[in-house]
Image 1 (cartoon, rainbow, N blue to C red):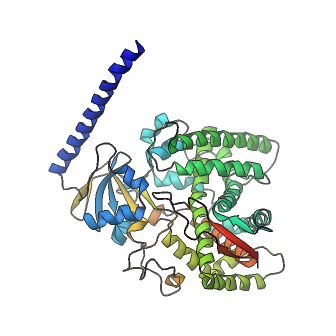
Image 2 (cartoon, rainbow, N blue to C red):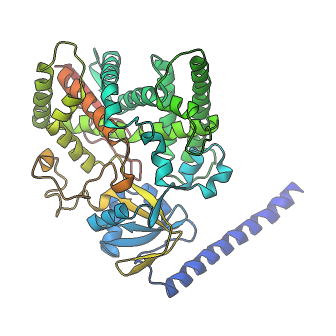
Image 3 (cartoon, rainbow, N blue to C red):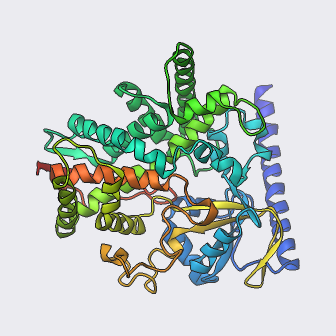
Length: 480
């Protein structure tokens, strides 16, 4: 009987699949015949061009279609959604100028599932009003400069502890993993108050690395797929964060004072007077930690890589940082004014993030029909801005493949919206100053303590939305 059921099930499944393909093909061809949509292709029914989007480099995916269809915008279908990719400075500026008017932020389905413990209510929450997105960051002022001024001494100490434990005395190190561990140490302390717990931090790092690999994937939870591994890691991470929440509640009920984002979320009602349930707090904390994990560790790793491959630029960075060291007492921590003095170093970091954007792009959902460049973009469609449509355009960056930090020196800044590693407009990353402080604080101690050379300069970089160094970045260390 089971064999008979299988024999019946297979042709029925094929028939249903073919009918679905025909339906979507008819739907797209019909809509294309009536409306002046942007040029482009929806690709295959249902799956569209998703596999090209996640398997090719962003530069190749975007540039090929800009050349084939239009340098201003083109349509595609990724993650099962009709999507318009806005290109160039005008496209970036248009999206930034119309947040909450024409667009709301939107998460791909894989992200919705990974960071929501009760996914059944996700359909109404895939879009994110800006007020909700920034409430956690800005209401208590955690990421405002006045709060970061107080945190920088702690960050300085944590960076030095990390280097002493994982870099000192080593002849070679793998930078990418250590950068992940460092940024997790810093974000776990900042977001959750976790301290002096290396085992837990290493576990968070391992789990978050798996989770972020599944952020932009086809959300099929089938054993052997990247998304399946990410879902399992997210479940394990959620259990760890819920355990941390219980420990924090117990400590605070006994009179221990804590000042971190998790504590604020647990013991302060939202604007409606509602206290956030523990499961929601866990998911929000996981989202914050993901945002403070992948991009900063990417930026830190490639900053070390490019400096190791360009010793003359590294020497200039070291000279700037040693001037700051000489202006301080022995053992004195960095402060906010020191960070503001690191102008050349920050230009180097911006150039690294131009060449290897830690944020490849983000999605929005259209909330009302509108027209752009004579084309109609309907309500419900998604739009996407990509760093790859501007970051290597020779009009904005002469010799765009060259590593040249002087592009960002005073008086020579590139055009607005041409290099936006933190996004732009009202949706600019609220943690931009935190990320800047983390990058520069780490760089200060690394260049003043070590000299290094890159062992594997031709290491393969993964394609898609997650361009990580597949073999890591290995360097040979010497004490400076």
